[in-house]
Image (cartoon, rainbow, N blue to C red; front, side, top):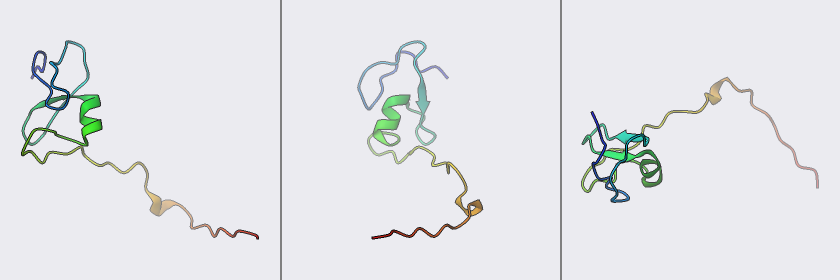
Length: 71
């Protein structure tokens, strides 16, 4: 699916060839990748599409550490 020439709903400028693009999985509207990030997901009015939240690391594998502060 090509987004070239389509208008990004966040910045209201057309997508140019070679630009990084994210398509909303809910409404399929293309956004510039930076606009998607800044907008926190889909910025099309009425759409609830959001960026997927992927955990960076699994904290359950880390040991618990006690931290003490000396006065």
